[in-house]
Image 1 (cartoon, rainbow, N blue to C red):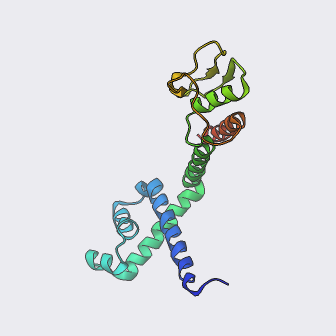
Image 2 (spheres, rainbow, N blue to C red; image 1 turned 90 degrees about the vertical axis):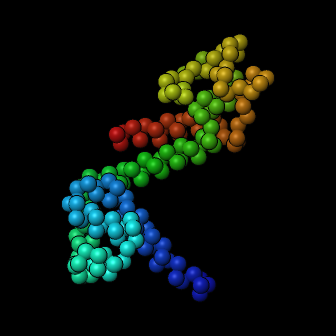
Image 3 (cartoon, rainbow, N blue to C red; image 1 turned 180 degrees about the vertical axis):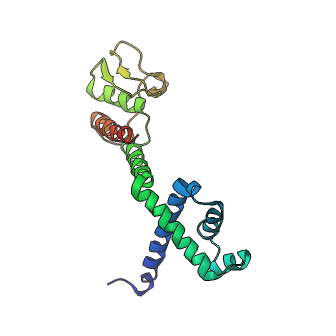
Length: 183
């Protein structure tokens, strides 16, 4: 059974999610509202003013402010239903976060260097794995390794987590491909 003091948290979380969605919708589609709608909507959503404060400031009824906010919400939601920009942004942000988690905060070059160290293979081609987005090639053992991934002894930096770098790169490439498809 849930402790009594947690009962009030759920409505607050739901309200915060609603406000977060309104902010996203406004960020993406707010310019499509009239100047008046934008200013009132900003006062409620971004400036956290009460309906009464806005009504008094603008010389209209509290109900008028409420109706205007509801109308703006409907307009912004209808744009999202048609264009799905917020949905795609959130999916892309989540994908980028997943890539960061998979890499353990390492650059693509560090992952490639770790892979080279683990399997000893040479001249492996990884499209788009270079730090500048160009293709990366893992050099033969007799050649220099990427300088950014070496410690002072010329060795690759250690892996931060115990993952197979090949699997990490495959997953990163899969997610990156999905992001590019969205564009």
